[in-house]
Length: 329
Image 1 (cartoon, rainbow, N blue to C red):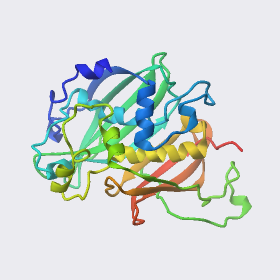
Image 2 (image 1 turned 60 degrees about the vertical axis):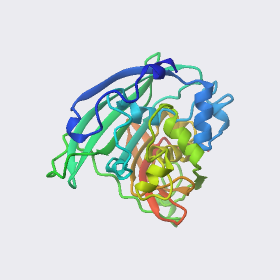
Image 3 (image 1 turned 90 degrees about the vertical axis):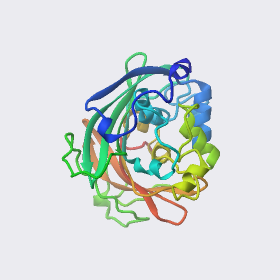
Image 4 (image 1 turned 30 degrees about the vertical axis):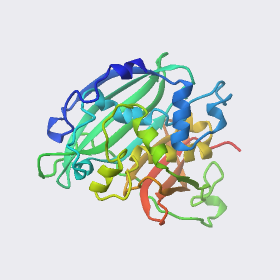
């Protein structure tokens, strides 16, 4: 990762709402989807699906669908400092990843070079807190789009401010209705033959601290300590253990959708997710979902799902809308 080694993790602007320019482009950089990166991500996510290490439906081995999601999330470190707080603990919680949207167009093959780009596209105040909107994309060297993302994140600000209107308002998320089963007449079945309310197989993961540490530092191994990687900082912030990144939960949701939709998730998957509660290292999560219906998206029929993530106590810590072309038989 020669490009990574050239970057100074403490150079650049501080993470503060007032310092964010809109629009603000971070340029682009390259990375290689090599075998060590895929193996590290597989460990972090406990996802050793065979497509990543042997032939896949697309030919050779491919990276996980969300392999580049955190790299896209962190691309603003090209302009902003990784180390921004004075280690008081609670300051880390002034910033929060509150919403994430991921969409997938094509797989990244193991061994190929990809180009990452990103930008701040909006900022606004909501509930007295400063929200910034980050968008980015990953493209293969041949120009094809691999995946894109859009995140909403709270940044620390000098003080409470009056709410403002987003300049790039998004449609409201479909309300997620957690359920386990439903009895629906055949006439109500979707084109895929799945009645609304049909549950999908749940995905359960226990996120260990070593896995969380690899996920949070894969792209920035020299990053300063944070609430995600340091127990002392987490405890000063009032947490029992380091905080799992919201993006890591989003990657677990992507794995669940890959298991359900198969190869179609790589070429037409879309998920929009809201984070509602904290998950800490050592906790077990459960990704659940149910068929919500069918729709047209981008000129194609898609199957829509309601998805939710529970912690070990059964509390819902994230909800999501997801869709992709219906899975095959």
